[in-house]
Amino acid sequence: MKASESKYKHCMYFIANALGRRIEKLAMETWKQVDLSPSHAYLLLLVIEEPGIQPTGLSEQLLLTPSTITRLIEKLEDKGLATRSTEGKLTKVYPTEKAKALLPKLLECVNSFTENYSNILGKDESLRMVKNMAALADKLPE
Amino acid sequence: MKASESKYKHCMYFIANALGRRIEKLAMETWKQVDLSPSHAYLLLLVIEEPGIQPTGLSEQLLLTPSTITRLIEKLEDKGLATRSTEGKLTKVYPTEKAKALLPKLLECVNSFTENYSNILGKDESLRMVKNMAALADKLPE
DNA sequence: GAATCATATTTGCATATACAAATAAACTTC
DNA sequence: GAAGTTTATTTGTATATGCAAATATGATTC
Image 1: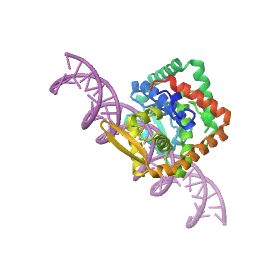
Image 2 (image 1 turned 30 degrees about the horizontal axis):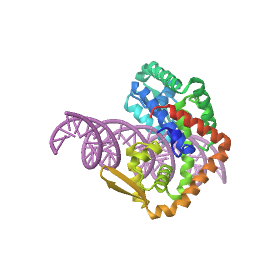
Image 3 (image 1 turned 90 degrees about the vertical axis):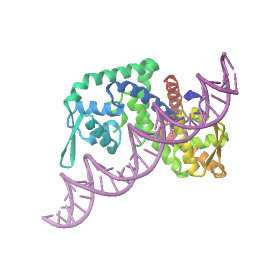
Image 4 (image 1 turned 135 degrees about the vertical axis):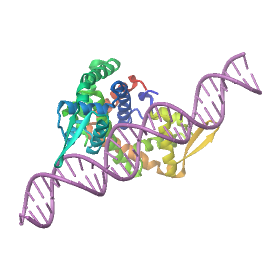
């Protein structure tokens, strides 16, 4: 069924989550190429861009809770893509060589995902909607 | 951090999910009053409105997979709010008396949630955005 | 410098959701 | 009417995420 045919088509909760799940699915397909979930991939990109970034910084950038960040990093460690070094109460996260070597493919995925939804949703429409949705998110409490 | 300040502010995956999580949080607070998650509540409303509705119908209305629907119903059974009756290969779901008695409160929650986000996001803006987001979701593959 | 407070991170636990496989019933076709 | 196919539902398992508590470090205040 289409979202706009559901009895809850007027409900923000329903529509925001339905849209999120569908976008997530699309993203998962793209990132499967490098055997990562979208969250792991975006976190890894931040780590490559800024080696030594801390969980707090990642949490802020990704709008995910610190505990979720810990779990994401753990998985990247398991995959040999990131390392953690504890310095006092701080933790710094670094990309491994393997991760750096993967960068071109990661960027390719970013592009192909963007192209993917732009083709489906329309390029201008997507840009506009992302902006508007970000503005909505800004207004809501963390 | 605001969504529009993140490095991924232009990414549909990132923004759609961040918005979804924030809306979900708001919805959870509302529905806590009746000790239900938003998904359980909306499912229960469908069951009250159409006693005997089948998991397939619920799955279509809620845009959730059948297995998720099964799990949601199980929980409502545990709470004494719904019952299932298996007839051949079909399953029909019914509200209990307890659920029917709860209806006014459920409707109150629907209203207070809508008011809640309308106040935060602006009434017209919310309406327009829900419509636009539904249109986006429609275009994406299930 | 000891005691308190604040900050960063992790851990234990709970939840919602999905996928794939299993089950079971109904339908088709010959 | 038997065999194969389709449909409806459930089950087993995996995932991402969050909250609250635990831990550990650093900062402040007296």
